[in-house]
Length: 141
Image 1: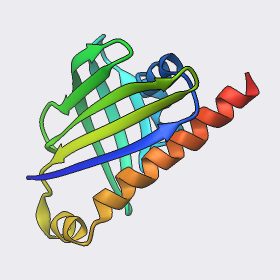
Image 2 (image 1 turned 60 degrees about the vertical axis):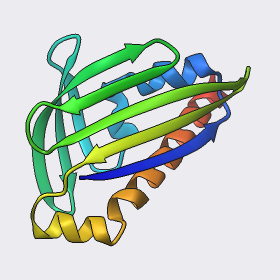
Image 3 (image 1 turned 180 degrees about the horizontal axis):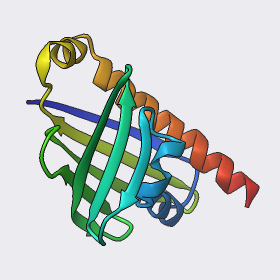
Image 4 (image 1 turned 90 degrees about the vertical axis):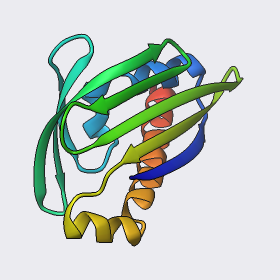
């Protein structure tokens, strides 16, 4: 099992950051490799991903949701992934977002990618993508 923790500060209010991050259906707009996330129920989502030419579909369950503070989810079956995203108010226009990801690489390719830091770089890149995405949307409002 591997763990990653990455943080980023975004120049939007806590409410805006939290609200946007909990719109799972918007994840393809800023998460690399996520093609579609649909809601199956209030706590269950269905994901379609494509990474390095490998397509995968899986379900994820929202296991905890505290408004303006944190949201957590885990996959129902394979792949074995779980995440907790926390939001910290820094000031009225700045929020710190921390992503904690726990996953189990499967197979040779995923294990090699993990050893080479692929998932860590992707997590950091996805946070930067979210920052650009949310700040540009906020600037347009």
